[in-house]
Every structure is written in C-alpha cells, then in structure tokens.
Length: 240
Figure (tube, rainbow, N blue to C red):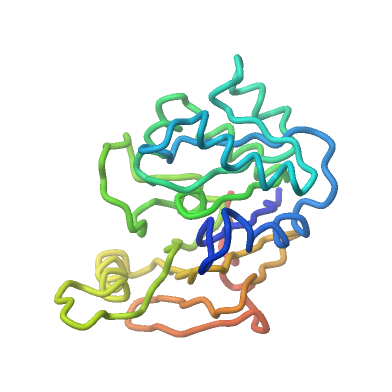
C-alpha cells in the first residue's frame, strides 16, 4: 500500500485568493481527473457546509475538476469509495475529527487513501493526516472520542507554523508549545509547515512544496529543511 498525499499548511497565502497559491500544486498532484472529487467540510464551524462547498468548488471547477461535498450525498461511504480523490478543508480540527468519528468514516478514508486514492488537505485537513491531532493550533471546542486521527504519515503536523514573537506578547511561542508536546511524547517528530507550503507524498517520494523551509522538531532538537533536501526519513516508519 502507498499513499498519495498533498498536505497544505493553509488555504490562503499572503494576499492571494482562496486556494490561489495552492492550485498549481493541486493540478500537478492530481493530474487530469474525470470523476468527482469528494470534499469533506466538517472542520467548518462558523461557515455553513453549503457555503463552504461553494467556496471550495470555485477554484477546483476553474481548474477543471468536479467536486461535491459529502454532506450532500445519500451514501457517504459509497461516495468515498467512488470518488476520484478526497479533499478535506480547514477550520477546527477537533470538530472535523469529531464528525469523522460520529459518522464512522475515519477507518474507511484511511483504507481508501492507503490503497492509493489521492488525499488533499489544508490546515485541519492536514492535521488529521498525522497519527493524532495533538499538534493542532485549534481550541478544543468539542471533544472527539479520541485524538487518534488518520495516521497517513508517521510524523505529527503543525500547519500555519509561525516562529515570530510579537513585542509585548508574554505567552508561549509555537516552538515552545511543540517542545512541550515532545517533552511528553519524546519519540514523536513534528513537521511545522509555514504558510504557503505543504508536504507532498507521491509514489512513496516525499517533497516540500512552496518557497519556505519546513521546521522539524524532535526531542531537544529543531532544524529546517527546504525543498532541495531529502525528506524521505519523515515516512520511514511503517504505517501498516
């Protein structure tokens, strides 16, 4: 089994439009697709699912792809199986995972993706590709049955990674929060994805997309890797 993943940090980059920066990577990742992609909007909380579907559909349709939200289909399980790929949007990671557990879709999505079905996620949609959602930036507005997620990659993911510390801000930085996670989970590894970047796994090859390096966190260790460097070690562990 092998997974084809495009895990983006964000839906927007700088002053660009929704998914504007990402579509070049999405088109390269997907190639031509005649069948419909399935969108999962469950991370949306302050936006209705119909509105979320419309927001996502426009850039995909403009790029030549058919896409339909899972909340509009009669048989979600069959829609997952029949889709040309699965697209999971951002929002609140806890709500997203809660809904996937509620509708018993987590195992089926993982099964389909590990068989090779393309998976595209951004923000919360990237978070759930990790073993757990324990490195999300979101507030736990709802309690899922477990923090365990899709485990499509063996490393933890932190989208929207930011290493700036504004003057006068006395709270913990993102790096400090991730160091706390690693203190409690010393065998884990976290990849911090800066805005406008993403992790691509295609045919068992790992690469970084975007113009900024990723930040890798390990216990008592932090370093950067850019798109020219080997990222294969990030998926060295057996996912099965």
